[in-house]
Image 1 (cartoon, rainbow, N blue to C red):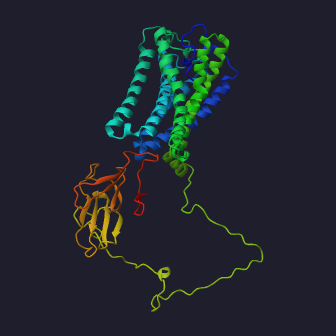
Image 2 (tube, helix red, strand yellow):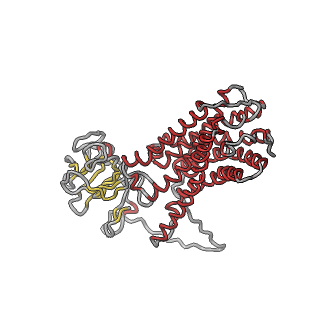
Image 3 (cartoon, one colour):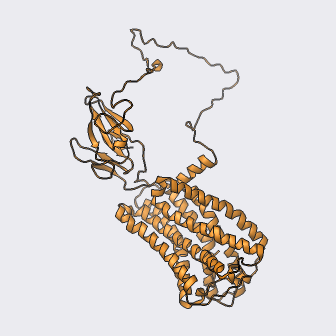
Length: 489
């Protein structure tokens, strides 16, 4: 797609005038039929990420959003310009502004996507192998957000200056695709070499090397620690990264290799024809990327199945069917229903029925509040049967855990965990969901132990952020503590 990836410093070859085996009519239908579903898929993925707080806050999705936005720019501007050229056999409208915009999108935004693909591969190493670098908000700003903002500014500032303001004279030929192939800055010995080395060749090869290094590091880490390789722990990350790398290695790397071969003496006619073929094929990097995101981001994939394909997970996933041979007789033993009113000691649980009306044991019926007795969005409870049957209740919207004494449940409760508002400090909770002597603080991704009469809690499980890796916990909804082995589940 980006012709500037090859021959950007030569004047004796015009790729735009080089004909390939694929006719204009075939190019039109290929680009149109792939562009429409790709745009729809990209918009759907972006919609799912933007409306879901969990997906928005997941740092590994941020760079994917940037690549999707850069790709949509090419899909909505570059591809329609090319289709319009095929229909009219010329650039319409035939103005320099049209050519400048086409160059900016075709070259600048595509090369920007290549740069961010390399950053994606690099950042995956940080997320998996160097989590301490992004363990706090300050570190995430320095290591994650600042580099992305710098790259965005660099891409737009560089290509706006190179295409619109670089002191050279552009030549526009409205009868050729891309208005005569390259803007004039590509022929400058400094700008052209910088663009090819820094913006094209380096990120293209780095992305492939970093992706292969990621797989190697996973294998090496498992081998070095003498542990079996559990691919399911890194499966989504590895599949996503290798899928992106496959696009890069299939389309972008060949263009860079062709350019190197040209400098080594490859004939001009062969270079021009092969480059023109890959110019069309490189559009598939943009077309296929949204579908990789759709398949590799679990929250987006789930939404696609439920809202688009109308599929729902069944409560019972498996069932057993027993096929009996012919003339098989089944003996049935009928047991009488136990009489719970009799004096015999029998198990009546099978026929026990709940009362139609319940009794309020803690809190105030049909009333919420912040005082010691009422509750606001109560969650799970824990009954301490060893010490007086005291009841501990997760008071969700009050960000606390209330204790009600077993011998006087109707009385006021005592705040034993939290109660200091919404937050991440040791004496605060954020979306508590469960309690079992320990408090499961979901939105803070941690489990707190609150010693008796202590002003603040002690973090016993601290995950510092969201994720899908073996030492992280996402927005969980419950927990279980096995006292025999002192293990959380």
